[in-house]
Image (cartoon, rainbow, N blue to C red; front, top):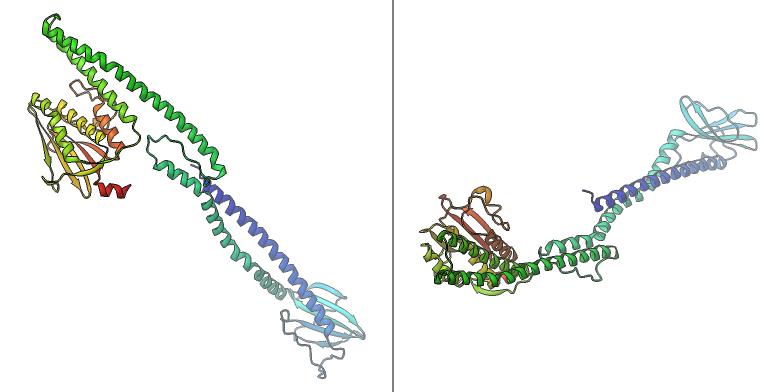
Length: 450
């Protein structure tokens, strides 16, 4: 995957490095050439500044002070008007006399830079080894490069900071979108902090969110309307069926009428679940309140006690340490959604627990967080189906009964909306299933988390 930040940094740093290299090369050669010209000027200055009566062994005038940048191995030679050498500053072999001006020669495998000038009654020649000149010129040229060598890393760090700061709004937009709930389809608010370059992207995202919201709203409206329209005639049909069975106007095999009633009950439950699912999907925001998890559990046990007794199931409420009998287990949650979650899990357990079984609603606490578990001793769920039974309308092949595959998916939808964890696991002893919900926070902890 390509990264804009990496591409920007790569091109900027590589381009800056290449430009710095070219600039350094140019500066170096310019400084080198200027140093060479300076040394030529010094050779000429030395030649012109020599005393007119300077001769071999003459002590009236000493040789000029040549201490300076170019005084290393400077050779001075003087000839009189007859061409006879009268002065030589080195023990090395003298160089041949050259014409006036600047010349470069090779003598005894050494290259020399020579300047000669004809004066009244004599000829002066000043020479210097090329190697000495090159070393001195190189030193001067390198001295001119140190500001550039210092500027390059500083500029690279500046490029890194500028690119990071320039792309910060993109990161902020990504963080804003990542922090959103999956059902939050409100437009992204544009303010003065959004760069002009990002505004078309934000506007396109807002347009997409608006269309998604409209499509989602149409789907929820359709489900709610269809379920509402179906509920009334189905309820009336069931009443008519019961009345006909009582007064004997409906005749037929008991098995046939039983199947009709079973399918009718399944249709009624499916419609009720569709209405519940539509309500959950239509509530992006949560009216949070402080509720007692224990009271909700007692209420749910009371609501399902008759159904459990009819099936001969032992249904009860338990507390697992560190939860005590006197603990009210206050949590911050949306009451209707939490009781719907409890009811769906208990209803699912009762439907699939065989007659004479046992179901416990267990209140739990882990650190500061509260939760509950619905534990039954029914057939459980095959391991390969545990990850799919939370999907809508999915029913495992081994399941018997009149379920529609929506109960657990509604429970998962509510858990996700409350940012809770719903986990299904088979019991350790191999008998039954445990539906564990965790992540409920006490009121103070929930406010601090918000």
